[in-house]
Image (cartoon, rainbow, N blue to C red; front, side):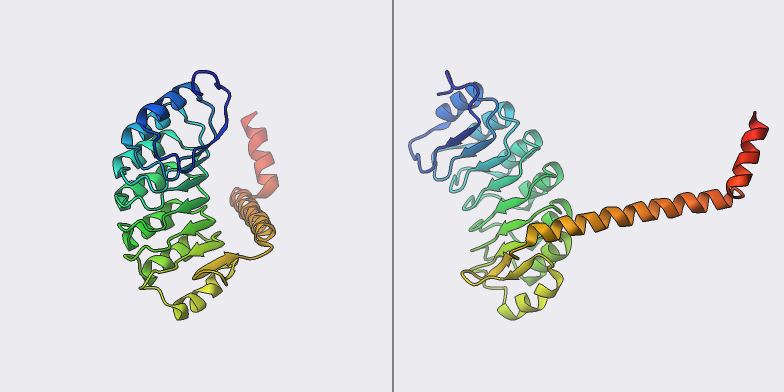
Amino acid sequence: MGKYCHKLEILNMFGCKHVADAGIKAIAHGCPVLRELQLTGCAALTGTAVKELATHCTKLKNLSIASCQLIENKDLIRLAKHCKELEKLDISECKNITSKGLQILSQECNNLETLNLSNCVSVDDKALNILSSGCVGLRNLNLAGCQSISERGIADIAHGCTGIGYLNVTNCKNVTRRFLMHLITDLQFSDPAHTYFGYQPKPNADELRSKAKELQLMAKAAIEIQRLIRGTLARGGVRGEQAEAREMK
């Protein structure tokens, strides 16, 4: 495939348990324009495979290495530093991923909107605090089964990632329903979920985000206009500026 499909953009290898690093290396070298790659359940893969993807497939926007339990922080760091266009990342059940790896991810991948960390047993409140200050554009976050997180970390996400719509905290023993019902007032794009423990996006979440962005741009424009007016008045108004211009001539 890597030898002949040089223009391949989407590849799904879900559940291909026998795929090893050598196979991913061939794909990475031969398919440099890959945008979406599904490697969920390819349990034999190691950091070597991630290194090849990070080096040669820098256009990746959607990547799943879920259940690839040999992946470590250093591999996530390398991926984040080279694949800066990532929008969706699934590293669920990667038990070796901690706040150290997520810190670099939050610094480098500013376009990240969807992140699956379910059953990442080493993810804790420190990791969520890092995400809340770096991945502010997150809209979808899956934390199901992350036993080390608490309500403090969830509050950080809610207040830092203000565009969040989907948040799954199923089987997070330190997060209570009462807390979630209280926090919902701070989440303008979320409703209580019915099929899992957490929040689901409002039906019109995208429309609400667009309106919020428009209002934000208008507010910035108003602030800039006020700044210019204050500057003009401080220099004696329009006439003062005209007089100053004549003197310079």
